[in-house]
Length: 227
Ligand code: CA
Image (cartoon, rainbow, N blue to C red):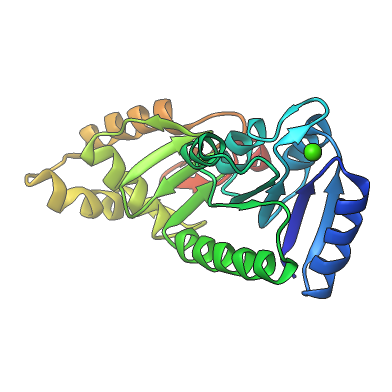
């Protein structure tokens, strides 16, 4: 069941929405403030954020970055239908925008469309702890920040990704690097690339590359979990 986080400070609207969305078959968590919304986003996994813009402790827009960093699509539902608000919301990366008062059936169909699109995009993304690898753009991000990798480093990361949870021999890793390097990457150079990749991608909440003595290396999704 897909889980929607609803941020709405108006009790009546919120209760109506929770009821209707649950009727559509979604699980709904409702939070009335920006701060509670941020807390929920940090603590739980959601498939979609449906947020009001005018909240007692700030703007719903402040949730957009937090949600998008976690790969959660965002729909804003707000009474502010002026063009400036719509553009701002979409510029922040919102997936859709609906102006109050709206028809519940229209909202439900927009939610379905956004969820479908997000599912398609997720297939192009690999998550390693707090690291996101965008396989389509060949980019690596941590909390929305781009981590620049060289072609060889990226290729090395892809080789690990292609064999989840497996220990790869130095030979297997060298094979993975062959065609991008265009020339032979020797055994010593591999150690250098591993070291550089570690320096770029490892973090307490992120992946780590473990040395398996006498065999090779293994990529752990979450450094802390592995220890
Ligand atoms: Ca409001």
